[in-house]
Amino acid sequence: MDRLTELELFVKVAELGSMGGAAEALGLSNPAASRHLAALESRLSARLVERNTRRLYLTSEGQAFFERARAVLVELKDAETAINSSTLKPSGLLRISASLSFSMQQIAPRLPRYHQRYPQVRVHIEAANRYLDMIENGIDVAIRNREFEPDSSITIRRLGSTRRLLCASSAYLAARGTPQQPEDLAGHDFLIYVHANHAHELRLSQGEDTRVVAIQGLLESNDGQVLRAAAVNGLGILVQPSYIVYDDIVAGRLVPLLNDWDLPRIQINIAYPNRRHVSAKVRSFIDFMVEEFERDDAERKWTSYMGLRRA
Image (cartoon, rainbow, N blue to C red; front, side, top):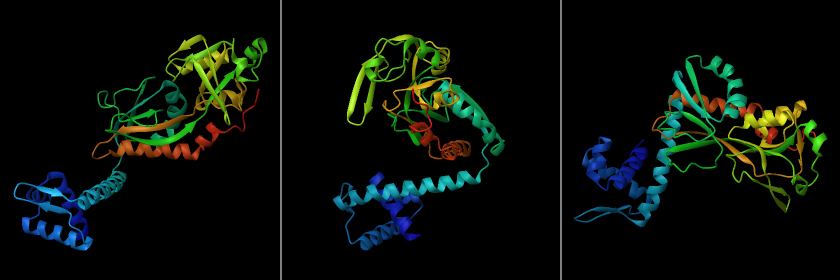
C-alpha cells in the first residue's frame, strides 16, 4: 500500500510541480508526503526531484520514471473501472453510431441476444455513412473503419478486419463476360461507393505484383445497401467489404471476381469517448460485440480465400 501511495504522490508532484499541492490532493500532511517521496527515492537509489528557492523540478531519472509510473496508474485505474463497471447492472439508453450496412447486417441481428442478457438497456442506432462527432451527437459507441482516431479523447478497440471483394451477379457476367485478370476490368460497369478511399481506382495486389485500375461508375451511391441491391439485380460489378456481400456469395446471388487478388483491407473498430469512468452499458456492448465476433470467427471468415466460389 505504501508503494502505491509513493507512486501516486510522485506522479501528483510531477503533474502539479508542488509538494504541498500534491499532499493536499492526496489528503496527506506535508511531512507525510516528504517521507513517502524520500522512501521512494531511497528504494530506487535515485534522486527524482530537485528543489530550489523558486520551484520544484524533475531530474532526468525522475522524468523517465514519471512517464512509466503514470502509465502504471492509468492501467490500474482502468482495471478498477472495468471491475466496478462489471458489478453494476447496465441500464438506460445506449446510443450507437454505425453505417447502415453494418447496422443492418452486424448489429440488428445480434440485438435479441444482447437484450436477453441486458434487458434494462434500451438501444438507439444512428445509422450514418459518415463519422459523427461522438460528443456533439451524444454517441456512446461507434463502429468505424479507420485505424486510429485523430481525436485523442476517443478510445478504440479492434473488432477485426475484412477483405474488400469484387463481385457481380451471374446474369451480369453472362452478358458482359467474367474478368480473369485486372486488365479485364476495363470497360465494365461498376457500382461505386463514394465514401471509399480512392473510390474511382482499384489497387489490386497478388504477392509482389500490384496493379492499379481506373474505374467508372454506372451507379454511384453513399450507401452500400443501394449498391448491393443493384449488383444482385445485375447492374454491374460491386466493390464492398466481405461482411456486406458474404451471405450473397454463399447463397449464389453474387459471384466473387479475381478472388486471388487483394484490395486494401479494412479494419473494423469500436470507438467510445475516453471518459474517466466508462459506464456499465457502454462496456457491456463493447464486450458483447468482441465476444460475438470471436464466437462467429468473423475475421477469419471475412479475410479467408476459402469457401468462396471462384469465378
